Amino acid sequence: MSGGTYYVPEQSKLPIFASFSLFLTVFGAANWINGNSYGTWLFFAGGLMFAAVLWNWFSIVISENMAGKNSPQLKQSYVIGMGWFIFSEVMFFAAFFGALFYIRTLAVPWLAGEGDGGVSSELLWPGFEAQWPLMTTPDMAVNGEEALRKGPEQNMSWPGFGGLLSWLPFWNTAILMTSSVTVHFAHTAIKNNKRKQFNIMLGLTVLLGVIFLILQAEEYIHAYTELGLTLESGIYGSTFFMLTGFHGAHVTMGTMMLLIMWLRSVTKGHFKPDDNFGFEAASWYWHFVDVVWVGLFFAVYVFG
Image 1: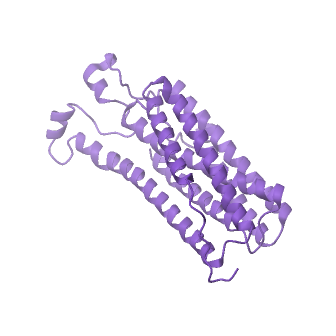
Image 2 (image 1 turned 45 degrees about the vertical axis):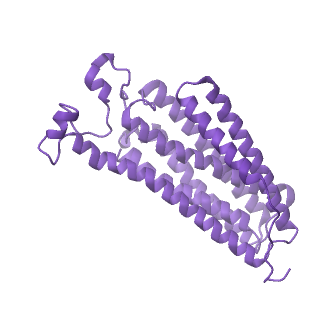
Image 3 (image 1 turned 60 degrees about the vertical axis):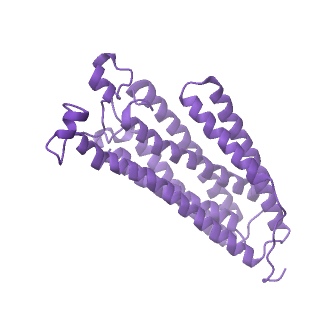
């Protein structure tokens, strides 16, 4: 295959199925959150359909690569495509971090009357005092104990060094930072053609990703059952679950990608020192997810 040849794959319906399955997943999640019983089924049906689409899509791309159809020019397109994808993810999270910044730094002080001598506070929420995390809701301000939408009883903020070892966000941070190191070791190992070390380090990275997701699920259970921190507990609950939930979804996707790379290496012996972009792309994504968590850890937990 000459370097000037650009392989164009056949037309595929997979993008259509991917879009439809994502629509089902999001539509199901929205209905699930709003208490509609069919939302749960739609969410899991869409998720399973999306997983099936990815499985087939990955299989096709892998078989094309193993058949030698990917020319250097096409591989360069993969690199550029992955770069743009990660850039779009940066913008995705920038919007949510921007929303958190707007609420904490601008909206809450404005609601307390800052900058207009208290006029806004008296008109919109009499007696409101700026604080973050915001532990009250407008419903509570109007209806008191009769309010349907109540703020959290406690928050997930920094507990001080005395409570550090029992604080789940600390362990989640330690786990993700360690996984970033192990995936780097895996990358170094495959570059040096050390297959066994590559498999061990990559497998350990996948295990750490799974542990992170288990601990985050435990954190959510703790928040809902013991802290009163839910999606309905005001703007603090909304922003907390929006940021941590979307990050958890990205960790799930990254873990699946790395798991596929590990299975390819262990069962098929895929990846060589000079031909491992599939793994490299997944590792780029994993490092991005880790960096987002560091920002989230400080913005949401430590300074939140």
